[in-house]
Length: 361
Image (cartoon, helix red, strand yellow):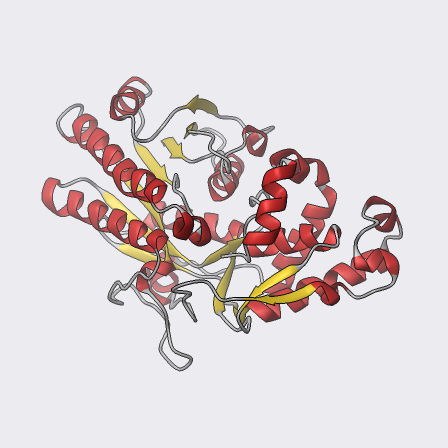
């Protein structure tokens, strides 16, 4: 295969490129990324790929890449993805997630259908948030759950999902879509819950919890997500959608308490952490949980997401390989071992703004 990975310098995209390199070392990988705040070339250090700095909204650029490089597979990650940012500034989400996806689809149609007729696949990476919010006893989202997005972010992703479907049914473009649950793992930009709260804890900053903290999410380690996308590319039916989950449905407060306890244990096990992070409560004999503080809930906050992944299991052979305990422990170790990475992606003013205004996804 010869892949174009959009948003490949971002969190999930970079992990996918790393995964694909390890599993398919003979394949060609071109990364297209606009390098907005969440894109970072350092995420791809040591990985074989061709990098193109550009925007998915540049249709002519994408057409040229598809034609000149013999691309047969697009894996489309590029998106604005943070709910809080979409509330404060929805325009960027419409521009990237809706218009950008449409630009990619137009380029693919021009080159693959009207042009060289190459066998192809356009894989679109989406989110469980397009389905809206579940009650405590509602069945989990499946591929036939009606769309009911509640934020500008999820609405923009829902629109892009519909465009991908329409280009298959109208023009015959060979597409697949995957809707994933809450990702976590290495290289995640520190505006999402786990890296944000960990870095806040290390600096003795508040851990801002929306409302009662009992919003429930299904937690998916990014490595398992990459495996799921690979399974869709290998065995997914053209025109179909597959839900990819982590099998770990947990309230945000449980995740936060797990993080606090793990940080305390890490400082106990490694006395050097106190010297590196002297402002952390754990460096001074206090519990990390002392930083927890409640803030007003955000507008339109979905109460519960849950993924029914039986179709992916039955048709693709997908199942998550990491429990949340395993994935979280590995993630904590990664952030503690890669302080240079997260300091490098955060400048002081933005770090402070995130720390006081965002409470995760």
